[in-house]
Length: 120
Image 1: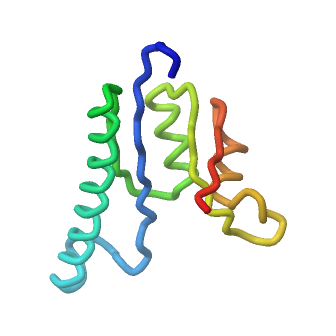
Image 2 (image 1 turned 180 degrees about the vertical axis):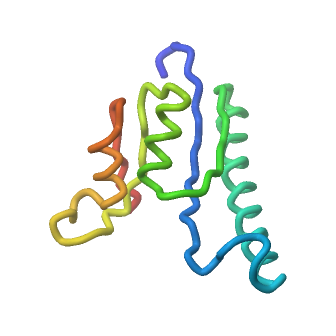
């Protein structure tokens, strides 16, 4: 960070669950399970952000739901990101062995530089 003023924004994208049709439909137990899962993800990303804040960095955290690549690029554009740092699992079809499909889509459509970090 070299002494420059940096604001970090951690984004976790929760993929839409095709089996979950909405808060008004389905059994109460399913709604409670989905809500519990989102709450746990929210707490997790807030804890990561607090770690950065404890080190003296300005850091926000957001949990959003939607298609991963589109949500990442949309949020980066919305906040005016200078750089996207993205963990990549390398999952995807054979032609995407080195860069996963989400990573490849973020790279292809991003309006700012993207730094990929292998999570293995």
